Length: 414
Image (tube, rainbow, N blue to C red; front, side):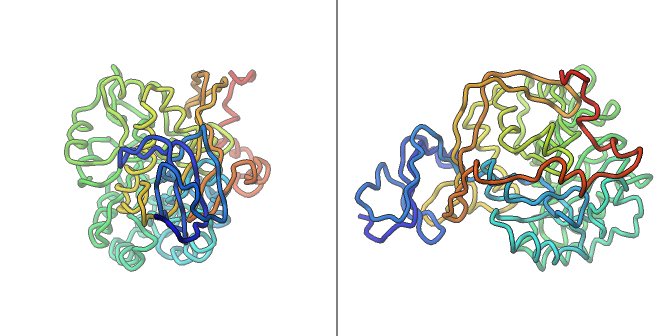
């Protein structure tokens, strides 16, 4: 029988797809770790009690694609409010930092954030400083040995190598940036995450990926034939199926321009589900079309995925993809990271990134997050306003609207 004082007890409907746990439970937390999981912990001394009866209590969500190097890159957001208010207790920055900026990411993001903040290290030494200039257009920035050794020396922080493989990022260099990213990943002994986009044939990208490497923006929906998972008739490309068979991980990476309803619907019609759901949260989608991670999860519930499948794609699956299997599940001794949420029946408009909308009558609403045993209530977390982000991150002059999703909305918003 538990006799030591618990710091916190959370009561609710525990939902952990990794262990099959589903039902009413009390979860006891001590020293930032899960200390007990019982039908009831009534009678056990505790300092704090969070009654989430009527809500789900899942492992804290893990978002493996976001941009949180605020004040250093044009993409970056301060991570705590948008992550913790959406149930995200672990967030992975997807390549904002190049190797010269890695220790700055440690000092100013990882060490100071309440959310667990990790990163993919970009193959380009300049990282993602400027959203309007391709980071791999000048191939001199890509030095595999330096990137690989830096990643290997910072394994507590770095979970893999990042490369973006669209024409706008690589210019005339084709898949040479990917080859160099793979070399760096092999030096580090880590996976790589590859952003797919228009201008580079998907077949050429997939051929270079290894088991455990990650395709992000899998439902992106831009570019010519052969640059998406499906062809013009909505059929999955053979090379996509072969890549999944080899163990390549398919990640959503919703973003501000990388999720198209028709591509996702066609893939799901063929039984091709994402392995991981991530947001690609950044300065240019936080106020639409993404909004936050919980809205992204709602879109896949709308598409017909069962709740347990969606939660797995947001917990144990991303934990496995980044090699952090102590996360993403509710077990005694694991970090006390939890998401507390409800399915709320209310009308919602769900946008993709191509100005297509779907309407639904329910959404996943996060009430609170628990990170290392500390409760963060959604209503108490203040996000940056659209005006604040615009002043800090938007290009000035006539080209400014190029990065604005709202600028392309129809006048009546429909």
